[in-house]
Length: 403
Picture 1 (cartoon, one colour):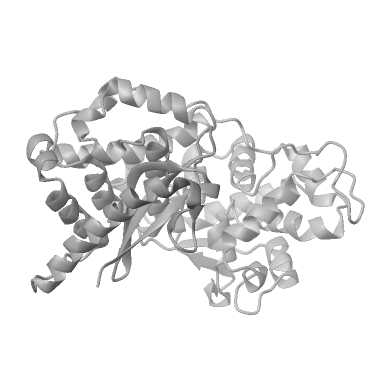
Picture 2 (cartoon, rainbow, N blue to C red):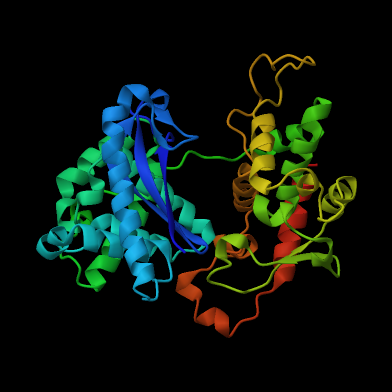
């Protein structure tokens, strides 16, 4: 049975402190929402009773009617004995076609309906980006729910990009734009639109700031005295480095049985959807010592014994790494300047690859060590078995270099 509810989206409040009021539709294990093109301040909305507070009562009647209209369409769909669509997004699309037939007949499918259809087909690891991009668009354009693809022209996107630029990095904006572009590509393939504004938008990447430590800095990091609360985080950074810049999710969610014949065997989460190739890292003595020091009850290392998800731990880890070298007194905030400004867990990967290059290893070998898929050699590599011993030798040499 499909159900609806009202909620005030407080994630992207505008300059007046107002959020978008949304209608949420739930069906089976799926959910979708649409903007009601109404903005309210949190003090004007009663979350507990899903209605406006006293000073906005005049608006409440219109809001409740919008919800009632949707509920009535759902009721008719169920009482007529017709099978409901499989997902909430498909049901919402049908509801809008019933309630606003003239818009669909005259203008064609609405952008948000197609966007949600594409979005809900995505894997969990990319779904979040699509959802955030949609929320950002709705915060920028309260009438987004009435727009077709043809309405979103180059001028609209330029204004949207300016809006995002107020509190987002350029590379963050590009992630959102790539999600939106994918939906436009889908619409082109399905002949929903011929509009393609991305031909005239510059989406080239901004130069990425180097995020790596020098050889001397790595030696300092490894040997420096740290506060007790920082020690585990520093050690986890070193462990990631000793494991050739392993991604945090792959390390913190690894299980003990993934150690086979002295090697850590896993499939990189970042490429799991497109490749099932097993990735293998030889566990050098330095890595084994840290694994033994922080051995988990149910995991290879202990962070996930204490956290519900790796991202929460990673947030604390990155915050701690950014304080290394600062003066720490129990119960007070660290004071002074950090030794490694901006240091995060991801620097381990950048640092390993940079030091490997400085030690004279080829880009191809470094790419193999990092688990990169080289499109230029994809066919050739079908016939060649990679020699993992060369990667092992490189990792041993780089670890020796920071001693």
